[in-house]
Every structure is written in C-alpha cells, then in structure tokens.
Image 1 (cartoon, rainbow, N blue to C red):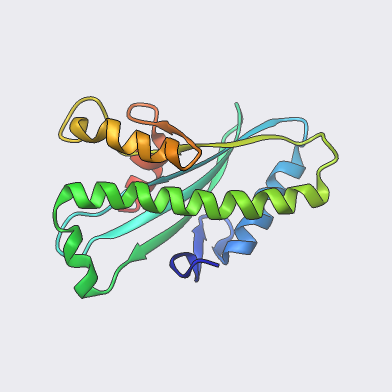
Image 2 (cartoon, helix red, strand yellow; image 1 turned 135 degrees about the horizontal axis):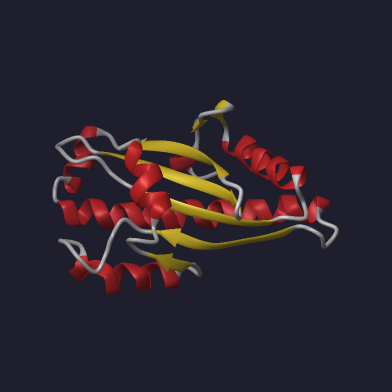
Length: 173
C-alpha cells in the first residue's frame, strides 16, 4: 500500500476505515443493488495557509440514487508543506493525489470485483474531478492538469462538473 494512503479514511456512516475496508464497503454498496449502474470518482481539495492539508475523496455513486464517499486528509510534515504555500502548487498536488489514489484503488478494486463479479455488476471507474475551471484563477492550469489526468488513464471533469472535488472535498478543507 502506498504510504500516503495508510491509516484511516472517514465515512460519515461507517466512521474510520482502512483502505481495504473502503474497497469492501464499495463492493457491499454495489451488491445491495447489483442491477444499478455505479460511478466511482476521485477528487481532492486543499486548505489555504502555511500548513495546508488535502482532503482526498473517493465517491461511489449509484446513478440516480445518491452515493457514498470516503475521505482521507493528507497532511505533510512542516518542512515539506512549505512548497504548498503558493496556490498553484496546492492545485497541482490535489490532482497528483487524486491520480495516485485513483490508480491505487482502481487496481485493487478490479481485483476484488473479479472475485465476485459474474458479469452482472455495472460500474465505471474513469473520472477524476479537479477543483479547477475555465473561469477564475485556475483557468491557466486547465490544459496542464487535464492532460495529467488523461495521462494517468482517467477522464477529467472540471468545474462546474467536478462536484467530488469542489463540493464534497471542499466541505472538509
């Protein structure tokens, strides 16, 4: 397991869960209504200031019926976090953390789902939501960051469609 994602993820219903327990909860959620379609999405936000932290979120949506999310707050040691004082560095780190978590979870999720999938589970794990947009101060970073997401094998969503980053993760930043 990547060191960054060791420890607990928070879920409002289940409390603190380890990464493998998050995957189990996601599978349980799908198995409750296997006839439905599911989107698995990762996004991240960051707090401002001298000691920023990064709430990175994985959300599983039962299309048309809501969903669940799991959140891990990443905080770097003081000497290392100085590089995130500038907002551009924080935005880049948000996308890097999202890609890293998505790659880590997708691989393990696919292994777990193959163990139980009989061809009847319908899901996609293809989106990363970035807290950037065509308007505002992040507009100059859109091409670079969406390219980074695409290069990691995911489809980027930006504001106003990036609700996992700009709403869910933002609530915890």
